Amino acid sequence: MKNAPLRGIVSYPITPFQEDGRVNLGLLRELVERQVKAGVHAIAPLGSTGVLPYLTDEEREAVTETTVQQVAGRVPTLVGVSSLTTERTVHHARFAERVGATAVMIIPMSYWKLTDAEILRHFDTVAKAISLPIALYNNPATGGIDLTPEVISKVLEIPNVTMVKESTGDVNRMHRLVQLAGEQVAFYNGSNPLALAAFVAGARGWCTAAPHLIPELNVQLYEAIERKELDLARMLFYRQLPLLQFIVKHGLPRAISAGLELTGTRVGPLRAPLLPLEAPQVEELRRILVTLEVLRA
Image (tube, rainbow, N blue to C red; front, side, top):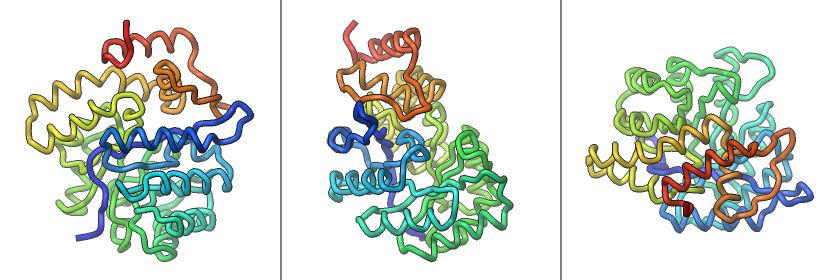
């Protein structure tokens, strides 16, 4: 069986900024520590929530090293290393391996729509440059490229591409991938409102930013699935669904930053061109957090 070191709740920290626009590494450490102590099963810096495309190479390396150091081996770390070019993706993958990451995640990013052959060579080149397990990330809404289950199954033939994060929001993609790649394929759900359906379909984990605000509910859902207590899992899922729908609708960096501000953590400005949520959206989020008993009425 291929090495797929992740399971459960894979938490994606935001990249916080200081008022002068620099990355706030001290606050990043604090946020990571909170999530590890809350019981998440892995930490994944530099995902969509961590605004990876908006960071310089130096900032990305600082976030990677800071996160891996703070986690200190207590849970696995999955570091986003995606870049427009294969050369830069290799660079960031090698850096992640050098500082001690458990695995890396790659979403094909391109101005031009890539051919299947170009996608395969991209992954193969990175895979040959490192020894870490690689998670393929499919999210056409952010990456602009939709990897079909057929293409994904071919990429999975590369020895150290061992995991798939599927974020299209279509559970049928997961069923099809199992048909093509076999029952042992390690797939992870990246679509928050699909969390329950994906676990029932066999997902090994849920990649989410929600643990910034409701880590206990997230972990409890996974634990209920593991115990095969589906009635409890459904109850836990529907309790958190309004928040999951909100953070997806309004964009993870905006929504999570607003939620942290509401709960008393000053996270600083977003990286331009992103703007904070407007007042009516913040009020809607406040009401959701009150219902979840994260905030007092």
